[in-house]
Each structure stands twice: as structure tokens, then as C-alpha cells.
Length: 336
Image 1 (spheres, rainbow, N blue to C red):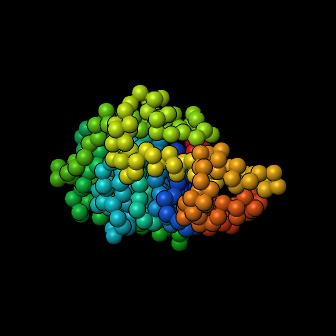
Image 2 (image 1 turned 90 degrees about the vertical axis):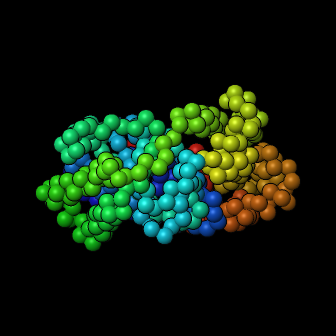
Image 3 (image 1 turned 30 degrees about the vertical axis):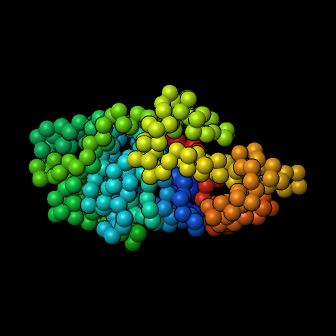
């Protein structure tokens, strides 16, 4: 049944569970309070969503295996997103293979989202509109439609979001939902099939194989303190190769990525620990931080408070915190 929801989040775990068409793990790279506003719209076959997030972040995304999804940005002035190693400005569309995994990194607060259809519906509608079926890409693509086509698609997306905010009952009406869906599909397929649309980037499959294996290994060993040598040994790749992939797709070295992960594990341990039986020093040491002073300085810079303050706080008070509520667990499981 057609309909829409608009929800605000201060807990990244709850935000991640609400995102449709993909499983996400999000962790912020900037200090501040995590806030997310998520608009979800479901028409007959087409799903739309758009999100505003208050902090820069690195996101690991696993796209649904049965829905053809495109990624859009809605603020024309926002900085390009580093998506799987390529800078994607707001005037471009990212097209995902079914069931694929990606990383993208933002440098500021950002406003993004997308659209998705079941692959068989997408192919059938494309056949009606342009005379041939559009098969799902086998690797990630970035395309730049003509400005007029891109503007129409983004304007339709904004109009639907405005209706969800001001007159959600209209979106429930079956004929309105059907009419809107037809316009959306026409605009989307025009962007992807117009001869003037430029295919600016197509990922090479070999370049994308290491990072999913990297994430799978980290997921399997999420409670362990891992280091670059551990990862390279398990993956069977050289440190140089891993460093090149992480720098390209995450915008940071694997050392930095694993350091942030260990900091998050320490944060989680501090939030769950009993301050009467556990000390900051013990927890820091458990996650490989031997110099307490340097650990405390880095912790405050990343989470916005001292590790002792986190340890003293009751777990239920986490939601009210500014920085530490960002990353309760680096690997949050979201199933849809």
C-alpha cells in the first residue's frame, strides 16, 4: 500500500535499521551530535528515500539482492561524496549492481538518498519506455545525465518529499501514487538511457573484491583488537595492496580505519562496564592502548568527552550524550 514516513533519529543503530533497500553500517568521522532525518516513500512498485545526516561519516552499504537501486544527492552545493574511490558530485547518479557492497565517505553533513525497484519491474518498465530491457550492471557505475534530465528527477524527488511532509494523505491515494510513480520511472530511465548521458565511471570488479572480504573478516572478528598485519595475513594480500584499496575507497589508511574501530570497541566497553569494578586503564589496555594519556586525548577528540565520563555514565544515558552516541558499535547488524 502506498504511504510515507518521516522520522528523526539520534541513535545511528535505529537509523540504520530504518533505511530501505540496503543494509548499512555508519560511523561518524566528525565530532558532534548524531542526528538523522529520514523520509521514506513507498508507491506501488517504486521506493524512495532521502536522509539528512548531521555529521561526516564513512558508510559501508550492502545493497538488496532483488531491488535495482540508484543513489542520489540532493544539496547542489554539498561537497562531493567519495564513493568506492571516486568523487561523486551532486549532479551524478550512482548505479548499483544487485547485492553489491560499497563504501562511501562524506566530508561534511550531507543530504542523500535514492530510488529502487524490483529488478524485474525495472526491466519491464524500461522495455515499455525505451524498447529494450535494462539489465542490472555487474559493477558500480557513475553516470552524469544532461542537466535538464537530472533536474527533473531531483525536482520530482523533492516534490514527493514535500508532500510527505505537508500532505501525506495524498500519497496514500492509489491513483495519485500510480501517477507519481509513472513520472518518476520515466524520469529515472530517461537519465539512465539518454544518448547524451555520460558514463563517467565503471568500477573494475578486481578493484572491489578486497574490501568486501575485509569487511567480512572484521564482522567475523568484531570483538577482537585487530592490526594491519593480522588483516593482511588473513586476506592474503600485501600491506601495500590493502593500503591502496583503503585509501582509494575510504579516504584513509587501514591503520587509521582499524584504530577508529579499536576506539569504538573501547567506547562500547566503557559504556557497558561497571565503574565500581572496571577502570579506564584496564579497558584501554584491553584494546591495545598502552599510553593512557594519549588514549584519553584521542578519545576526547573523537567522542567529545573523556573516557572516565563515559565509564561513569549509565548505559541508558547514552542517548543524551553529544559525541559518544555516535558509534556504540562499529558493526551494527541491520536486517531487512
